[in-house]
Image (cartoon, rainbow, N blue to C red; front, side, top):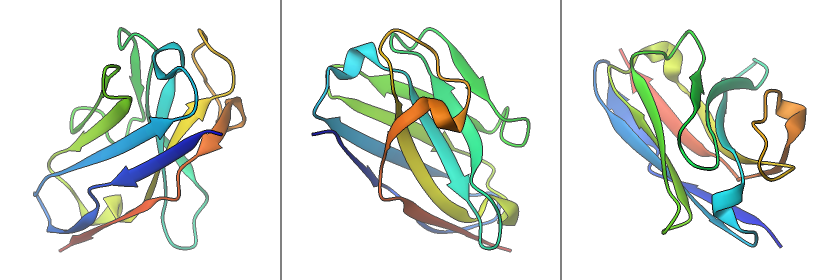
Length: 125
């Protein structure tokens, strides 16, 4: 059974930083693309960033490009999201997710099969 457990959320001021972590178990972590998504109150869940199984390929949404960095440690079965220069509009519940198929790069939310429970990030102005 796959489990994804996020941590690292919290309250931070505008311009501050946070590092989210997502610990995975249940499948061979190093063979699956991992992604981060977020959902703000009253809005649909949106893509934030994705990283391929090897870490060699990453994609970001335009809204976070240049401020957020996704990375992974396959030895620790963990994916990270370093968030810098945070803005109030970054306030959301952040979710990590794991691709349905190994050795592929998930491009859509529907490509992700497993999701964590989410961690709240609140950026005060």
